[in-house]
Length: 101
Image (cartoon, rainbow, N blue to C red; front, side, top):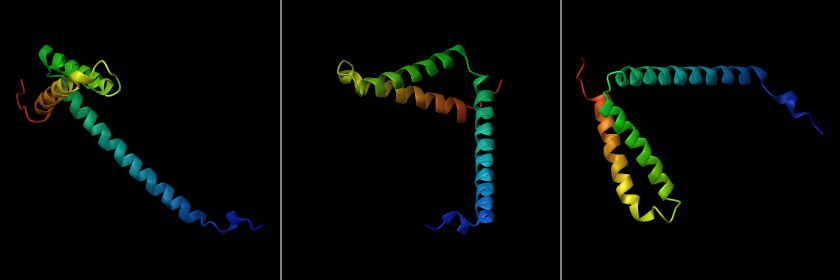
């Protein structure tokens, strides 16, 4: 049997690993910027905005749960509309509302 590990170009593998680490570091930095931006915008949320956020998460969870439950199947469209409406409101509030106090 041949030893296939002898034919591996270790320098090429090392260079590729460093390239992938660079991509991962760039992705981490981008995620950090998005998180910082979202936290900064959330600091300006009112109690009503947080209630909408909770309704958004709750309706998403119920809608996903209804895909697997017979009880909620008949309410699936209502739950999806509630999720979509609250998500659109929050999307507008975070990205397009320039009401800086």
